[in-house]
Image 1 (cartoon, rainbow, N blue to C red):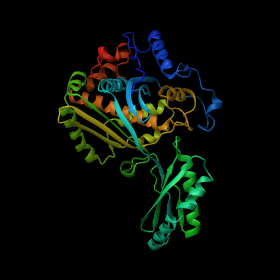
Image 2 (tube, rainbow, N blue to C red):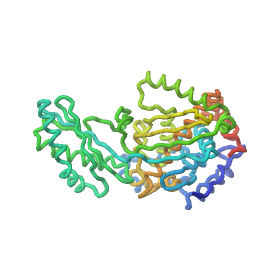
Image 3 (cartoon, helix red, strand yellow):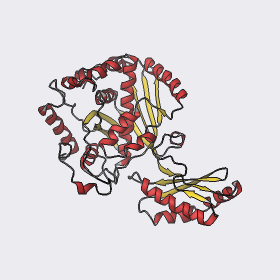
Image 4 (cartoon, rainbow, N blue to C red):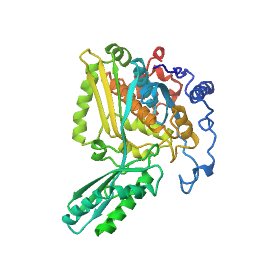
Length: 410
């Protein structure tokens, strides 16, 4: 499928803050977005527009936003290229993600798909005995039709898909699974869970009930890895041996071996995050695009795989089972967040799956770049050259840094 190609990101030895270079980049992203982006250029958001998003307002946080890419994505809506906005104060990070995206672009792009799209809530009810809890579980299972109608009365967009009760002694966990369309849907699902739990409480003589009884909200947890919550997304690519050698200055075997060694450490930590730096990329894009950044604790859960193929190439993939995002509602519709989502073509109805696929592809790009820098021992040098402990590095072209993509390969 043909797609419009984006221009390389302008780079200049005069530095990131040079007005001419900055203007060139802004022109680039405005062309890609198909609209002016005044808030990214410095216009202040009108205080009245954040009503419902903040209390005791005093102003707005200022975090610099850079663009990585272009990212070539073969997604569910077709093949396209994107400049990915990232808000961060960690020097060298955007350059590293941009390098990974450049390598993936040269490899033919990233294939990404949303595999599952469900949001779960987990209220708990407490009973006088395990037998009473088990009887309530049976009652909950028989209530699917009536609870679907109950949910429909409180939301036009959310739907109750399943009820999965689980007894732990005399306590009953109600895993309620919802579809929330393009909204993150947390408030909707919490209201629906409260209504369902109240109904069961009244019909089963529960002693206590808590809407967030098994509180997975914004917390690293095993359910996020195994069952997933939000959008489960896979991104994958194959990089030729020559590409890995020339652009990443390592080998597929070294990349695979490095990740296997890291897995030993991950196992000892007992972590649910088996990627290398998913939280870095997710937090930066979340912040740029008006997402609830605290959900990175769940969203960074996932699996990364590097494998040398029989042909000697590198297969790379990442699965993120708990991406909690929204392209409508929350903070997505105003200021720089709306402009960044417009840059990605994701704002509004129908944008959430594309946004999820871009996020997964971004995570894969960052992990490829970072692991390569571990393999060829360029990681520390890149941070020394571009990182925030070297403020004078602002005058250095990011493409010249160790671990960054060579300029002629932009």
